[in-house]
Length: 231
View: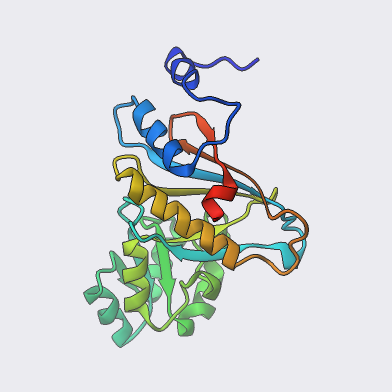
């Protein structure tokens, strides 16, 4: 049997494991139970009926959470010419061409998102082994390979999230900070749910949503009534 800390055991007792909560009630409960000395993130853990080893059952896309994530996102841009000044004036934290590629090759990864213009992708290919495992490699699918660097920077700064199922068909996504209002967090979750349904892979068979749990960084997981959320 798993041994929990006393703090965790005490809050775990306040979650009724025999029932499925509405998402709003679950958010309010997690806010009430939070008793650590930092602001926790609200996380959604979603098991989908997908087997990502098949190409037509992979789910990787982006969503803009209407209330943001509460996280300060550091954006780097690799471009050339006038796109460099466009990126700087749009608020990019790091901007460069071959010089920035060299910095990344040396292991300087002081950013959360890397945006690149299509004409730089050949040069960026050699960064694959560094960026790939960290989920930082620019790709058209995630909206990080584009000539419209201004829009891309603004969207990621405002709370645009990339998500994809792991190899077991599960999504783990932070959807905001626990000090947001419960209604704002619930709206972010609803937006995520609609995005997951809209982007259902063509090869998905049978039951698509298998389970959904909400948890906080250091808190327990709370089972959610998926039918009510999807109504």
